[in-house]
Amino acid sequence: MTHITVRSAVASDLSELARLAALDSATPPRGPALIAEADSRLIAALPLGSGRPIADPFEPTAEIVALLQLRAQQLRESSAKRRGLGERMRSLLRPAPAIR
Image (cartoon, rainbow, N blue to C red; front, side):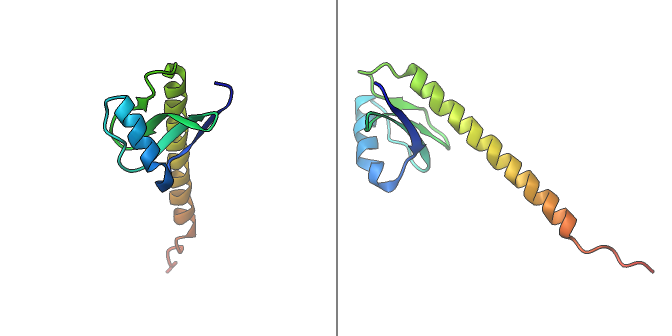
């Protein structure tokens, strides 16, 4: 493997996710997932909701699954920061109380 791409799964990945899950004796991820491709071939996937990672058992994928888990953590942290920023902005934009 020379080039690894980590990206969000899209609808056109469903058949490849099913193939990968069958190789790993697992169920394909339902809902959002991150996938890792090596040289344009799907070799691992990580559901972003619940479920375990799936990976090609004929490839060395432990480090790639760890990479997917790291990326998922980064996405969760980024989402939490955006939510926090949105809450701060809303509090700043609230009308000031009327002075009597």
